[in-house]
Length: 481
Length: 81
Image 1 (cartoon, chains in turn brown, red):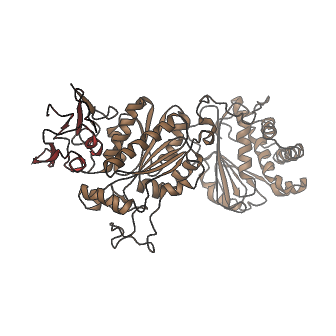
Image 2 (spheres, rainbow over the protein chains, first blue to last red):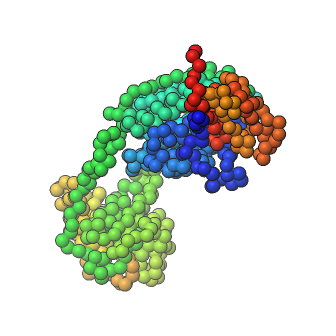
Image 3 (cartoon, each protein chain N blue to C red):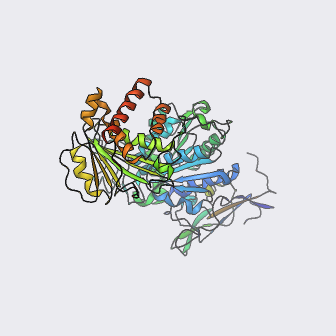
């Protein structure tokens, strides 16, 4: 009585329908190690019954088309970013069995950072790392793992330590970290080593099923096409030239259950408690937008870094939030903490906001001359320009735009607090537009833990700003400010 | 298949890319390169017809998922070592 002992694992599609050309066979070259490892992974998924919850995070390289073959959930990540994508998938779906499948160019070169940090965090994912010492898909360029002396298209005289640096050993590198639970290097050479690889693949997946932590399997694998040797010689080349540099061993085998991110620990409920954010205190008084007298606000605030430009915009947005409005606030600033340019875009609306970016603001608050010169032309006709006249002295003739000058620095000095100029500007804006209630701004300050003496100083500044423009009304209240 | 054998191996001529890794790895040395080109232009591996032990090594070393199927004869017990 004959029975099937080994056949194509069920995790593979019957036919590779997404592939162009022949849909029965893979795109891999004869003798390529990828197919072998695919088979080991697929067989393990079959045997463990995890096909329905297995998610493959693919890489860029020859194995980019792995999703053609494996009937599991899959996401193609940007080059090298598979461990970062897998982190997101695993955290969103802790019950999923998430595995990365990456080549050496992908993982050790462009993705060096992602793998290092995923391993360091002990993300309870599984990473299969195929090391064939070369960039395969792109045509045989040198990889970080290329052995010294090996000729590639980008090391045509052979890799040297002096010029290209020695090969990087990923298992050894990751072994310096506390995060990983399991690290092993195997090779697809003879039958014995295939069985060792099989065992390692299964263990790496089993670890994830049992919540033991981050598992990393490096698989030394042949690339006959780019090495320009026969498949048989390629296997011998792995034994002779790769194994001595990349020793086959278990580098780490520990249960790191306790070290994996808290939200993912095996046995804890995926429905975890989210820590409460800052309390949002609803404002009792509402401004003109909530009241419907004023349309949507699309505003730019601009000045030097350190003038409180971003904070003014944020105060406005936070206040609107407390009036039940939709808001967006995006800052844009240079690398300097002081003195660089800074601006922010604020949108406030009663309906959902499609884009936080503002190309044509209906109101502009400028704190310095360069900002005026940069943004004045963008203001929509009928719009409002609020200028800190202490610094913005040269305002060109802007027809159709209501210009309001606020000597914010002088006023702030009078209050004995030069840092309060931004609140004076904001106070003036509130007085003219009444866009949000001052109470809502103060509620936002209180919610965010502003100390009473500072709160008092800010109230004084807001009031001072209001007094400066007292009696000024918005010329064009119909405008979507 | 040889009825007296413990194992049997089916190689899909169409799937095989002729890399020869199974031929190399087979402990019983019962696989060989075929004499004609397949649809892809490869000389597919062929089973010589008898002597397969059903060890499955050819299956694991083969890079093509659907190329090799290994069967075992349940009636035949492993010979004493």
